[in-house]
Length: 107
Image 1 (cartoon, rainbow, N blue to C red):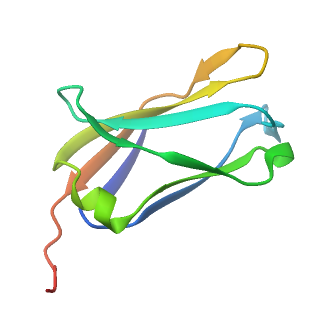
Image 2: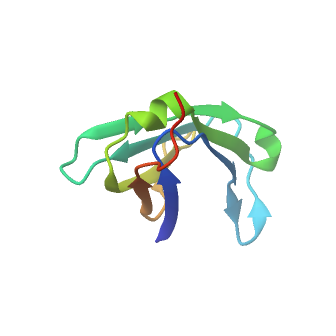
């Protein structure tokens, strides 16, 4: 399980590469989804996936400052779901996102 620490109002951008045995996989035609949920199961965020070099397995997950400002404080969870064009579905391990309030918030 991976853990990320984030303050509300921070921009979050994760650069990702899908690999198998250390080698990038071609993700052309894949559906990629990542949702962040609060402990009660409520949806906190649904990432819009930005595809990069699909032949090299590259994509990005991004949440703007305005989006994370609305996330609840506490321990949130996520995983990433991959669906191939042939119908194979795979999930990553859980990702924990520890969300804290920012101390410095001008304006």
